[in-house]
Image (cartoon, rainbow, N blue to C red; front, side, top):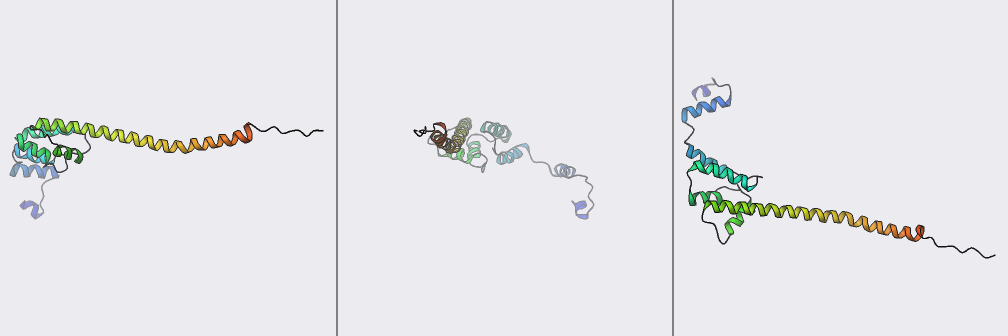
Length: 162
């Protein structure tokens, strides 16, 4: 630090500098690092199965068990999982007792949520297609009617009698 403050930096990269800091002060114990990682993990756009796999991997080294791990999954992951799914998990009448059950329910809710979104998108697409097709079909009918009256079935004109 003294070299850094004096402007005599002997590190060629930030990586070298960070490695020196870890060497000097230590990187923290594995358990603490896993807890920090557990608090930072997020679902983002991933499906719940992928998120749960990461959550399990990180939780294994954190030594969190039982209620503490459930609490971390439900609450302390500030926006880490889809808000609608978190709400359904928390508001459920029969809440699971084990972390495995919580994870299993979260996966099921995520699948249902994604399926309903796909159905909504399909229905929305069908409605938009119907809106686009309906005016054309009406215009085509009107055009056919006009053609049928004036061009397709012309009236016979009587020839003048001599």
